[in-house]
Image 1 (cartoon, rainbow, N blue to C red):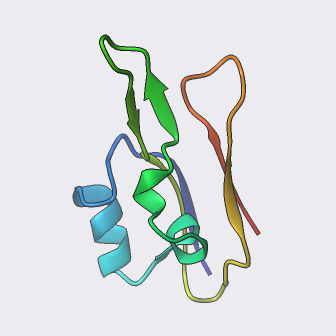
Image 2: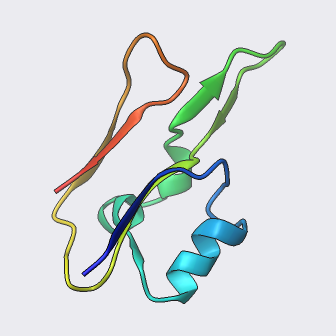
Image 3: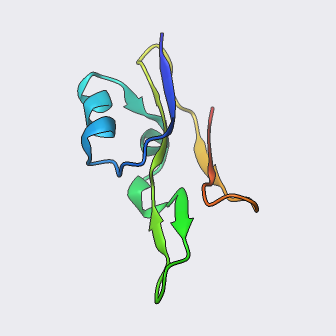
Length: 85
């Protein structure tokens, strides 16, 4: 049983997340939410529009299953929390 999580600095189609899914790991937020890449975990206040991307992940082996997963925004960081059960 394995859980891999963190700030990957990669959108879901880039090498790191794609490699983990190719290896059989499950993207927990994507497993519990339709259109997961429309829910950013990172925002940076550029002008004229801010940059917002999903670059933080929780992956797990099939020993686990995701019941629900959410993104929690908070003050003090440009990253939101990814929480899965």
